[in-house]
Image (cartoon, rainbow, N blue to C red; front, side, top):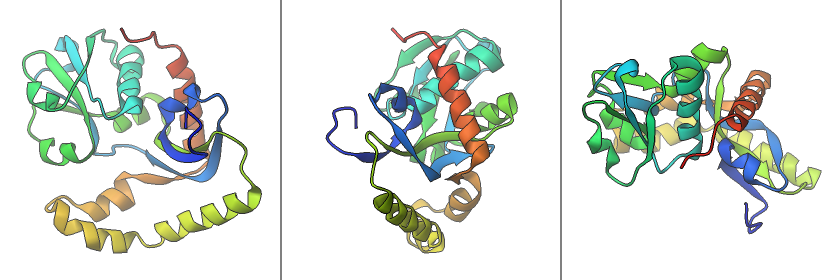
Length: 209
């Protein structure tokens, strides 16, 4: 997207400011209106005792979100460290870590303290959090957008088919509950408000070293 090699992508919202031109397509996103279960801060100690936070290399949006929460909600000032593969095994003492995605399915419940970042955002703002949305780097034809949104809607209507396919792979994790309840897949007015607020707060963060 940034290099203009594609016109449209499902991208982390933290990337949007990096685009020279951006158009958010309506209707659909990957977000959460409360706890999402797959984007968490894991720690052996309470928030106030955390000295270092390892940042998941797989998510620019989540690591930006945790910095917003630390500054505005938790009121802590840890050292931020960019992590590499296998970093989730380095959570010990006062070193915590942000972990996203499938790896959380096996980590949940293994640490004395875990903080769901989407849930913490909801408590801070009262709004849903949007992790990713469909964005184009140029204005697209209206007929294409209409057909694209229709295809997206068709996908949402077949979540049960996805559940049937993926449940065995992720057992005993409840895939159906995750897709239908933990995730918010529609970009409605409240989600748009949450997205706008996050992008504004993101501007106020200092650059990481």
